[in-house]
Image (cartoon, rainbow, N blue to C red; front, side, top):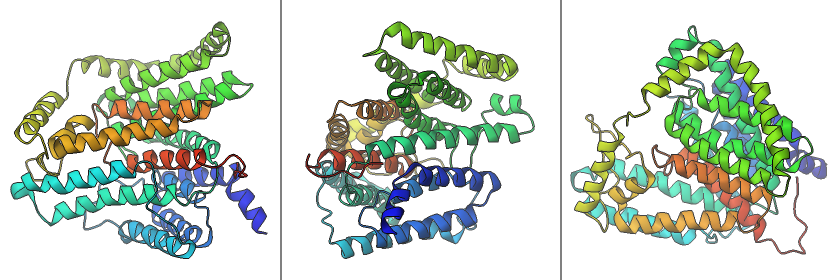
Length: 435
């Protein structure tokens, strides 16, 4: 019985079932039921299984179930607050039951330096030092907890399992984008005014996830005998990204697309790959011609905003000024506040780190990012290359939008690292748990 459960949890059917349920829950607005079910399933898997990999499809799919928009603190449902409590409780029971040592992980030094930077940043925080400082610091601590938990509780090599999960999530996000536009009264107006909102995220957030997930589609173009099929799917996902109208996301994706194309040509006849892409573009061109009014509108909007910095340049200059004022420890978490006194970021990972945590934070950031790529690329396999391209694309988008330090993206980043790190440190004689 247990062997059957293991095969199911490590198989494609399990991942497909959860991803299909995610689309249904999102489309029907059933997150009130779907999210609690996911939470309790995660809790029981934490408690009952030594290998925690089976919780990751639940964890990552839960990010895309919320379709509701416009919640305020007064009407956020109770289960949203319950989420971190139940997850941490399940993790705690797992650690105690299986006697897990959490103080092991390649990114631990970078995490500790960042936590030190967070503490030292309070020296210059001034009037912004408040109880909310502790709340945001706790969120940062949770990133570290998720990483340290998974890197020490995943059993065996699950890299291909992760690749397949990310591919399915790319399909989930793309389908949700399609359903959103099918559900609006005026698609042209929605594009013109960048109204896309899936509940769990707006245009820039959607674009970041697609940047992370689309390279795994091209992985299958590299490793299967039907590259044309996967190239068509990848281009369709790229069109979904275009319809987010996120200029930063589109530019970052253009870079990752180019890297994917280049890698696909390696070890194959380059003209063979080029013909597949030309054939794929021919298939897509027909769809574009049918919906040409929408694409013309999208082009006009992007062209009109091409040289518009959307207010980012003054924000970046403000970050530089704040760094100059306190270069060593930064100005604290709340270095940038809006007119209502609410927390805001600097729309650039490096500048945000410099302004808030100073040189100490920049050292920590460099340590973390270097560790991520070092471990992901420890094996020069197609899996490693495409995961590295995905992560690079996300970091590229982080130069113009808020990516690093945000829970929804940090979860994906630390999970990728934890899976790769755990798989690559397995001794050769050990039988890996393959999918």
